[in-house]
Length: 249
Image 1 (tube, rainbow, N blue to C red):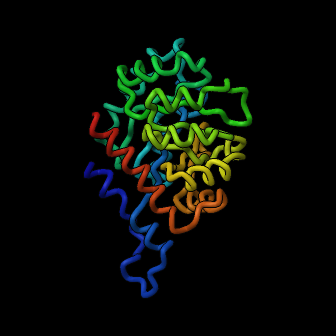
Image 2 (image 1 turned 120 degrees about the vertical axis):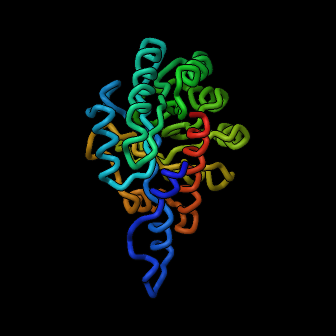
């Protein structure tokens, strides 16, 4: 926890500025927290350690390794991520969290997969939501929320009923930097703000160029219709997810 908190303060010289803007405050208080990334253990391009190294170089303070899983590979992928994280977490300057993304599973199987992921050591569990650019089964958003996943990723045209259920269950909805999935960011942001559901921003990184800076995250949120005054709370939601995950380690 100390590592995460100390990493959250940027060396920007901000305290010496005569004009202390809201943007300066964000840059001072936060660094990038990305809780949705993929390595070569599923369909990403990088080994986990290179993904971590590139995240450090990009200015991250926390990274979750959340490769795609279903029943065919869950007991292969998660233990390897857990092993890699245990070895690296004390020798890098950011928080690294083992996770998983339950992907394209039939809705009736999602709850059991989330439980299995947690039992295998995943500390951040996402469910691959009903993005408008993939043929995700209808009912996946609802099943992901009911399963108690931490984050419903790229939930597409999520229904009002499911938005309210996410609020009730404490499931965080994702604003994404990922091409294609991001087409529904504006809708997700509008519905989440309307009903008071927590949001987070992730990259869904598969390639080195997918990682983003804090300023890029801010601009994506603004482009999604999020008011500047709400951006800090979205970054704070990510920090709280990290704290929860680290308490489980």
